Length: 327
Image 1 (cartoon, helix red, strand yellow):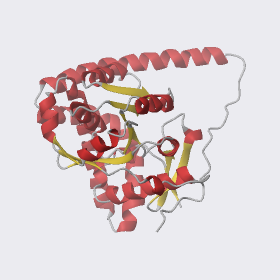
Image 2 (tube, rainbow, N blue to C red):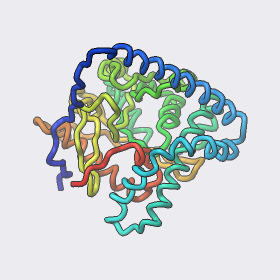
Image 3 (cartoon, helix red, strand yellow):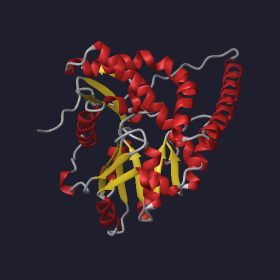
């Protein structure tokens, strides 16, 4: 059966703000200064906390992270619980079970942040020990064609550990990530340490993908979200009983380039062990065509993601950060 696509497949356009006179530039400058000050504050805190996380044992670092990071996640708690109820109540979950899933989701998110920070000093062999790979030969065989490969992932595990592991296994890995103000310096040191080549969303991702394919590299991108500034490139796609806004960029890349396209799944088995699955390449004949091809491809991926999310809802990053519209 063909995956369902929502009725509203049109792209979402941000409303234009009127240009105001009388102090508009001064207000904009004040916002810029305030934004830079906040980013510096975040950078100072992140650097200090990262040093602590690296100095402690992993379990102790996660305990500290729950103290330091959890308060920062509380503003999104109402949305997190509301979204979990929208998806899980129709499946028979109770409100109490949804509240527990919300707490577990916060704890998992803290683990992701702490473990990513610890990559600054993590022994590469430790990273290789903690992630079991299944289907690595699919990627190696795809790259033997000399055209590169597009890896389509999601946010059900530590994306950066997955990409770093592929780099350690000898693959050249380029990717796209959204800019996190104040954290750029810390993250870029991690990327440099593991020889990753990221491009920020909205800053040349399509060109970076084309270059990766020309150099026979793997280009890794996650499909299951839309970030501010990408509304014109996003679509409302069905996710269980709701619609969620998803960036069409990954699907358009898959359709525009004659390269192997492989879904990758990183699934945590515990707080300290994960399982990376690399699927066989998508058959070229199975790629949709026509004006709705991107929406249809996103619908396929999203339906698969939904089936996995409802099995382990606490593992998905975006419960507290995504809008869900009732169908």
